[in-house]
Length: 530
Image 1 (cartoon, rainbow, N blue to C red):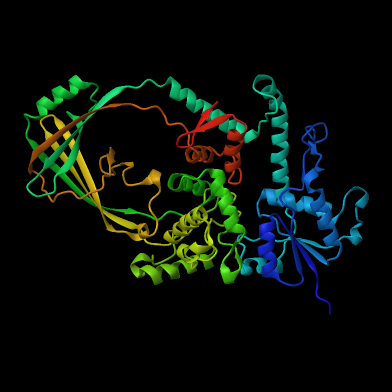
Image 2: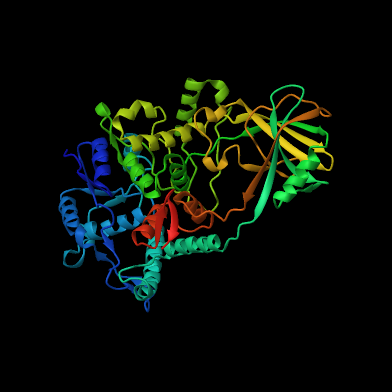
């Protein structure tokens, strides 16, 4: 009996090479190299009078690709379409089926002559995932294709109406998109707020104190006669300081509590882009380019091509049971049972998320960053390490802190001081807290409702009623600051929180704004309107 011949169509050549190795003989894997059809560039391509029917054209540069796919398809028994599992991938799948399987124009095939076509989906490019997908194919998903088509049509309608205005007012050749236009407006509104901002002077007054036992600690003046204090200028600061020098400083309240910091979920696309920007200094587009390579496969010596991470365009924090079990085994083996929760950590995905794919994670938790470092480019290694650590840490125990807070009175004035020491590192043993959520961020105290700084450092073991000595006074002038201009990370966060765009578009939005010279980047990747 002759071996069944199958064609598998994917999006990228790199992915094709990896998947063909996994499937072996009897399978030919070829790439469409992205979209093969699109709406025409020279006209709107949407029939507004007839239910907004789109008219697609074969992309000129893809004609050779289509001819090659048709030729291979004629010689096989079955066709699998394994484009990406998102809406864009589904649109490519439908266009491939239309052009390659059904044929088009003069080359259109009769139904009885068409080869059977199946849709296959996998979240990671591993032998197990690919093989299981081929063994369990599904039908093409019309609902996702329609969703992508609606977005594309809407974008075309908006772009064709706005673009002529840009040509007239800004520069010919520019174009506008439904999402990048909103992103640009957000940047412009922030810039107006920055320029309209008028700074106001204020003063802080910190004091270095010591009690009967070390160490000394720093407190800040917070209240006057029970109300939150505001020191507006140097004269006020000087007068308050002169008054305080005459007062006895008494420790009136000591609060000790245990606080827990829980592990963070594995990455979704937006959070990966934000963390890579904060910790690695990567632009969103660089992050996605590197992630794409890690997903499609890297040569690992004798192992050959291996996909190192799961699909990198996702809005879900869901993880497979097998992956969780592997991570927990690794935690137990490397850090011990005190770092392993009694049951797996489960994270909630936002209600607005599509939840179509798993979170971004390593395809094998056992494949540590150090074990493959020699096979990766430096920046690719750093990104893989970030993804790996975040995933492993997500299945570890919470970090525990001992926090001590003091309330100090001096006449009509009150001070506050607090410090925290890590009691048990938990997941922080593997993954450093995100920049915007570190221990110095302000949080409301659960007892007082007031905002307090969780300062790192040990507080002395003092008792209520102790009299404190002043070692140093630290008055300091400040000025209120305008809202910060957007970095790549903060702009992505703003878009995500307002439901603008989707995981697969954030990097493209930012790149388009810069490439089309709507904005420019300054030091620190700050986006400024031109």
